[in-house]
Amino acid sequence: MRNTLRIGGRRGSQPKAWAVALVAALFAWACSDPIAYEEGPLGARRIDRAFLLDNRGDGAVSYVVVEERTSHVIDLAPCEDWPFLWPGERRLLPFDQVTGYRPDSLAVFYWCLLDIEGRAFDSGQFMLPF
Image 1 (cartoon, one colour):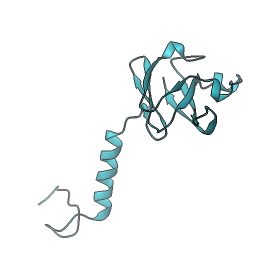
Image 2 (image 1 turned 30 degrees about the horizontal axis):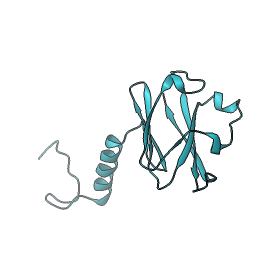
Image 3 (image 1 turned 180 degrees about the vertical axis):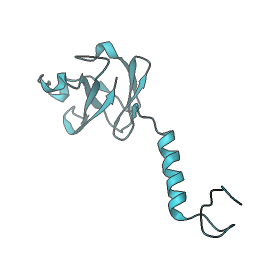
Image 4 (image 1 turned 90 degrees about the vertical axis):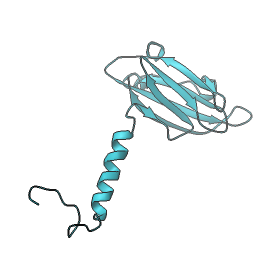
């Protein structure tokens, strides 16, 4: 058999582990969504000209979204004063409601977990393209 790709040793042998890992990595990369973040209590996904925010945690999460360059020149209010989502709640945030919105930039998502009395006890941030 000429001009055939053989993965593994002899014909009919099992594929090598590196080939299986490569195929799995390529599949995971192809199926990932580069315009979504779903790793913390606040998830976000770009939908048309808006972000769909999703509280994926067990408690209230406050958030603020700011354009990346603008985020360097503003002072943020305490996170207890930000809008918040209840557990399981979703909210659509149009791009034009993001402070400093520019189509060629990134959105910075700041979030805080709130305790039962409304005080922040954990926080984080992530970025997504507009």
